[in-house]
Image (cartoon, rainbow, N blue to C red; front, top):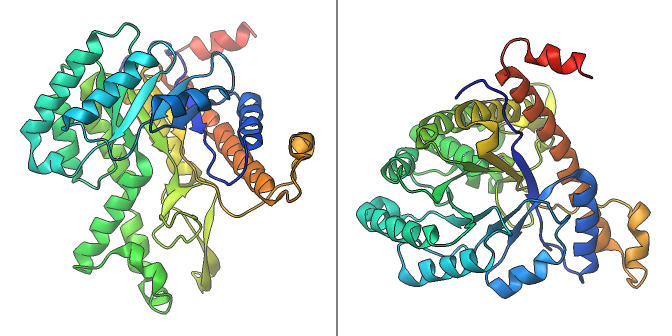
Length: 364
């Protein structure tokens, strides 16, 4: 990728009501996202549902990516019809649509390749069509995922979504299973008595996560198309998620162990801020700042934060617990967004030609 000056990537956050309550929660999200300068990644199973969420778009020019239903399968005609319907109805209004990959991609690669070609042909007929991003989500071998995108190199409207948490957990699972065949590292959280003795092997497995992500970005960069990233941290021992997953954590989080390991009662996650900076730098160097977009796909926890300047939004609520949970979640997204912007700024500065940074300083 050329080191000529690059436009900054689009930055977004997970924008939806994952906490029970009325649309005051969405208005709170709209205000917090607008203040942070974040775009929104919205989940929608139907166009009507998306229209409802778009009413709370953080700003008229805020970038939007739409995560479609997880059960859509590119190889199925009805799924392609639904994708086309979204693309037509929201052309010019959203940057991209995200669908999951599928384990059948490894079993029926030619079917998926043909389906992608047909889908691409439909999308090309739509003016200002959003990108269709296929996300690494089904736990495929990374080589299979890369091979698929190499095969659709020439398709102009379909590209890749790299979920770094999914990739990292997959790598850790694979590394741990190599030493403990038939054992899933993510099940250890339910066996706390075994964890202290196994911590060195857990740590060794986690060391494979960041290289796996960086290697995947390098391998996918040859596609020469925009790429979308889902950013979140994780750890196989995490019990923080209300949805039971091991990832979708803040990059500033740590895992409480319930015992001391190397003198500490907590342990760091797969990536942390240092790993995030490396991933952002690699993505911008390989794809280019103007060709990547990043969504902070961090889930809420049970923590709470007083509503402060948004208290009046919830005057009609007798119990403010869920509002304060939402406010805490939004504050975590905003803090991670500040870190993400720092990582982007550093990466773009590194990619500038010699002397350009000094010139920018002289211009004030």
